[in-house]
Length: 368
Image (cartoon, rainbow, N blue to C red; front, side):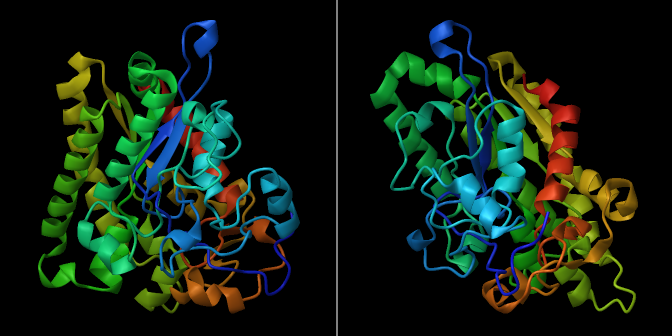
């Protein structure tokens, strides 16, 4: 696979009215008239985010069809989807899961102008790049908050009710699988890069605050009818090329404090998710933690095993700016399949396909 042509690197962060909240993933219905799978995506990192970039005046959006595949490949892939804005790896966390679970190739943004009614039955994206569980995170990024995304989910339910009626709407909502994919922006953007929260909290205290916000979000989603929720933890943030650069390691090793923050959050939230699952299991709810940290770290620590050659640099650069507006002026690498990271923050399609395979194999049994 060849990378985009030189000069074709563009901003991979797509800011949409579809943030990084839960991702509603696949579900199989019982009778013949309902034999379809449903996936919804929502969150705050660009792994899940997609929606019309014009909706929000933010730098965390993509204005171009580009990413960790050639422009021609992506244009062909999106030819019939009417997508005018796309995140560099927006499809690479959500779409592989949707595809592998038999849902659909791509999830259209719920707020997109060209959303078709049939998409309400098979899956839509609520995710919005730059969002987080901490409401301050979305304010910093001028994007929709996790609370806003829950409001969008309410709108989705109303449209679905109008389409299929109350009984079928309730069934669809309860049988779908949801993934919530946030936390990265809270830790990196809101604590380390722009240290507003660092002036209020030490790291353990901020993680406690973040975990509390996360659980409240998950409870609200569950109370709104979502019964099967897959909670995706945060990756080894200190191993992102931009964070290695900020850490200043001469040998470009993973930045330890950011990885410590990732592990601390994942450890705390996985415990709370287990408790919440036990509390809500009597109502038929299934809430499971998905460990993305060690699955991605395995690629970083054993690159040759997975066919990678470069783990410390991004195909389109390795700074914070190379994950934002200035990526438009950076040439892509000659062979993206050698890279784990597309830019200073976001993994490539190849990397995320491997990770998604692992996550599905390890965890989907707990939600089905």
